[in-house]
Length: 397
Ligand code: IFM
Image 1: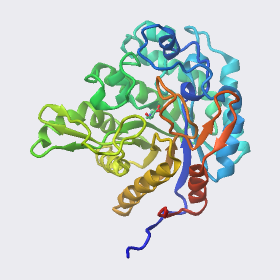
Image 2 (image 1 turned 90 degrees about the horizontal axis):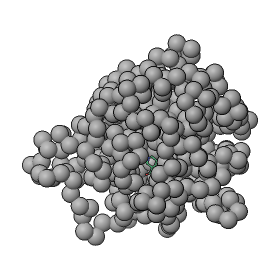
Image 3 (image 1 turned 120 degrees about the vertical axis):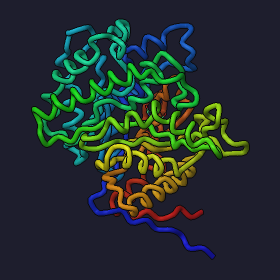
C-alpha cells in the first residue's frame, strides 16, 4: 500500500492568488479589448460586460483572500483607466488603485502589482499599440504617473506574459492563449516589450531602490517528439526563451504554467487521444509549472523565481485541488534541486472573464452573475490552510 505524500515548503515561502483588471473589474470601456468585444465580428463568445464587478467590490475580494490564509494578492492596474485619452491622466483612477493597495494592507495582505496585463488604452492600440514608434516612451510615461502610489509595494510586475502579447499582437488575434493556437510571434513587438520593461525597471528603481521588479512569462513545457530536439529549441526560442533570457539581471522572474505542448517536425502536435482536458480544451498536465520553473531558472541566470500563475479551468473543484497538488509536487522537487522559488500565486482568485468567455472557470471563488455574490470554493480553504502551515497533504478521497 503506498502512503500519502506530504510536501513541506519553507517558512518564508509565500502563497497568494492573482487576478487581472480587465478580467474582473467590468466596464473597462476605454480599453482595446472592450472595443473589440462590442464589434459584431469579434470572434468572441461573450463580452466582459460587468465581469465580477471587482472595480466596486475589490474590498470583498481582498477580505476573502485574507480570511482564507493566503498572504499575497496579485492584481493589475488598468492603463486604459489611468489614461483613457492621450495625456489625460485620471487622478481619481490612480487613487482607486492606491485604495486597493491600502485595502490589502488593512487586511494584512501583501499586494503584488502588475502594471500591464494584456489590455491597452484604445487610443494607444489604434495608433499601433506595441508596434507604434513611441510605444516605449508612452508606457514609461504612464508608469511615471502611477509610480507615486507604489511607494510601499515590494513586488511589481511590469508586463504580464510579454510572449503571449507578441503572439496575440496586442489582442488582435485568437483568444486561446497557447503557442500552438496562435500565430508566429512578432519579435519586433517582443523587442519593444523588452525595452519597455527595462525602462520601467530603471524608472522605478531610481525612485524605489529596494523595489523588486520583474516580468511574468507564460511557459508551455515544450516537449520534443523523438528526434525533434532541434525543432523544439527553434520553436521555443521566440515563444518563451527570448523573454526568459531578457529577464537576466532582473530582481525575479515570474513563471506562469498550465500545460505542455509537443513539438514535432512540423510544429505543435495535437493533444494525445484520451488525455483529460480542461475547460479551455488544454491537456490536464500538473507537472507543467515545475518544468517551467526549471527552464526559467536556467535561462534567466538563476535569479529568484516566483510562480505568478498556475491553475485549472474546471467545473469540478476537487479536480482543481488535485491539479494544484500535482503542480506543487513538481514545484517542490525543483526547489529540492536547488532552485530559489520564493512563492506560489494561484490563477485565479475569482471565476472571471477568460478572454472571450466566462465558461473556463479558474477561480477559487465563484461569482453569481446576477448578484455578484462571492462564494468561496473548497479549494480556497484548502490553499489557505497550506499558506498558514507550509504543509501540503496529498488529497485523499
Ligand atoms: O486568464 C489568463 C491570464 O490572463 C494570463 N495567463 C493565463 C490565464 C489563463 O488562460
